[in-house]
Figure 1 (cartoon, helix red, strand yellow):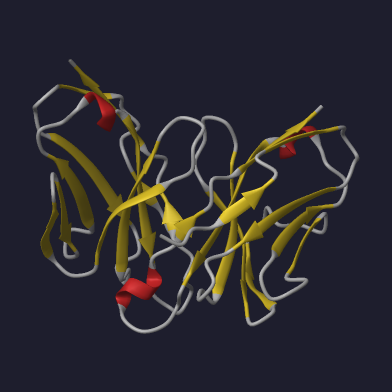
Figure 2 (cartoon, chains in turn orange, green; figure 1 turned 120 degrees about the horizontal axis):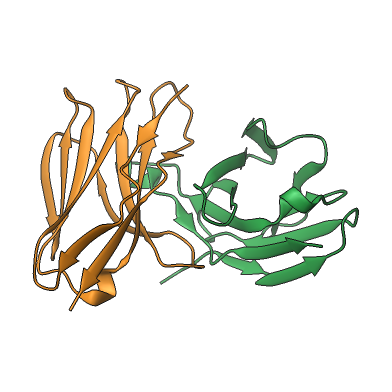
Length: 112
Length: 117
């Protein structure tokens, strides 16, 4: 069973702070990793994808991947109240099955 | 920017009725998916579709579910005899599936809320 684990939260941070969201996965052969943002009642919206070890930055977002530790994280700098949402980690495993497995998501609350 | 479109956005149906949810994937995408999300729970994979046939399905996707690509653009999910526990948001998704890693990114439609009463 391929597992993707996230702390459900809520993670509460003040406006302007850095929010750090974490995700671990069980399939060591996983190749592709995605962070989606989901507002209540809406569909998942892709924020970042990352495929190789290290950091990938896009605006206020930084994804970090450590395949040895089977760990992927998302940092949100200068958090805004509009960032308040559930953040879903999705992992695409090896073996030719292109079915991403989603974590339960971490609820982020950015308070003014 | 191209997007996955879904209809209806919300449907209320009586238990035992058939429901068809429709999706138009992004035009150059080759792989299509249906996911569902019960309120407050995680996004769950139902089925994937490639080259006009099911490529994978989950345990949830039992005999009451079926998918079709009736023409070159639409991709449908049919629930034959709905149950109360089918109430959920159903997401259609697609990906290019070719070329570099970027082809692995799955893009979601806005979802169809299904309420079974």
